[in-house]
Image 1 (cartoon, one colour):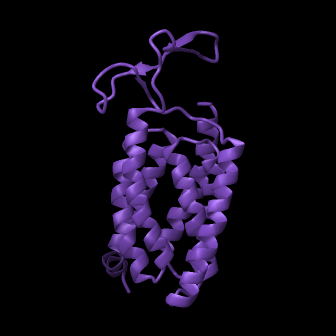
Image 2: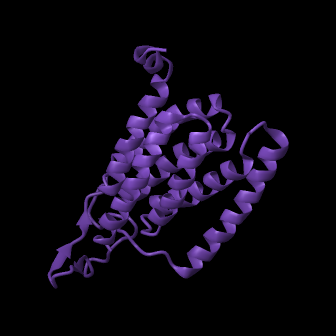
Amino acid sequence: MTISDWLSNNWIEIFGAITGIIYVFLEIRQNIWLWPVGIITSAVYIIVFFTSKFYADMSLQGYYLAISFAGWYWWVKGGRRWASGDRRQATGNGDEEEKSWNSPFEGGKGDVRLIVTRLKLKTGIILSIIFVFLYFLLWLALSKLTDSPVPEWDSFITSLSIIATWMLARKIYEHWFLWIVVNTASVIIFITRGLYPTVILYLVYLGMSFAGLKAWRRSL
């Protein structure tokens, strides 16, 4: 098979890998355009994972489509409304920074951009319980109802990705740690399935996860 034949046969996966890399780059930069790019990437990978029989991952992409719209809204609308006398926040150098901005959803001042926060203990416990529930639910479904070759790994990656994506939509810093675990597991499992463009994508994801961890730390 020539290179041109391979590119012709795998162009959808290659396109998804490229948009996926752009997505993570925008995520690191906290750029709002990550969400429309993520919608495109998810739509492409629904096709890729369906043809590769990664049914849980295919369903995950459907979840990504929904959470992308929610995350887009949350990031634009902001986390909370500032009172008129409380619109300034101290910066690291002791100065005060104006946080108010015009929201296209509200049409006026008083909204703030969603800021990076740390994971609270209560939220972490709830998310951990949800993860365990999702894992066993997906594992049973994939084992009994599909011909997935790796139901345990597929369930693990999917469940943890669901949690990480929700945390991203809420700009919770610790979501990067989850992506490091997800991307490492994904590289291993996709190698066994011969999805080499996707392997390259997830290797890039893994490196960018460490970069994102460092970049978002400066935003805390």
